[in-house]
Length: 257
Image (cartoon, rainbow, N blue to C red; front, top):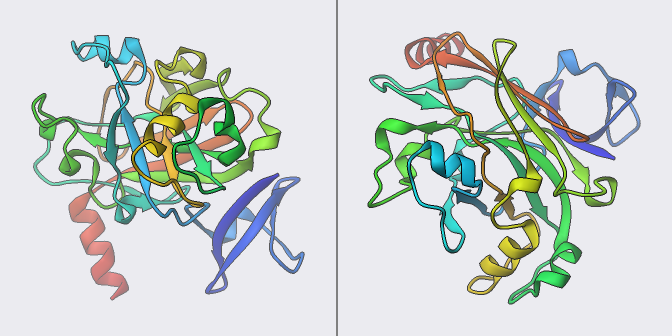
């Protein structure tokens, strides 16, 4: 089942996607064109993995990590399907990072790899938007590079873990203005989902609502205002977000105020 959060007629709903429409808690069907999509869940903590595909590490001329390289993605950066990604003033190189996101549904500490999937609620699509200008090897990856408002698109929905037969066999593709820019498969993860869950829970309790971004395959490239980024993961869906100039976004806020 595909679970979504959205605003319809001024109210937040938690519904499901069925036969091309959203169905709310009372069974009312609504067109996806008349709602504002929200991140499909409200995460407690978002953990990100850097360099979890060997080919991605190679394209950045960095060594393959010996253990998972973690960072925290600020919740303030999260946006939903179709929401604009704001291109910050003064930056030179902003890019997408298509990722499979794992949603934790059961709390656990020191989780063994063989039991890790018992703690998974489901999966969604993430775009770990990054400004390369602020990434330095010594303090990699800095919060500033990945933590801007709007730098964390999630969605459009999350799908039950039981509906994904093998999360380590999913094709991932990124399109920019309809052109394929990035292609990968979760079979190429350096650290598999069960290993990552075990690693994180070795020092912190994972709780329901936590989200783990599993890393991006090779193929990053710069995007600019006016571009439209779409990330597709087989069996899950397609997340779409336009890129807008920060100045335009500020003027939009002023008009709404």
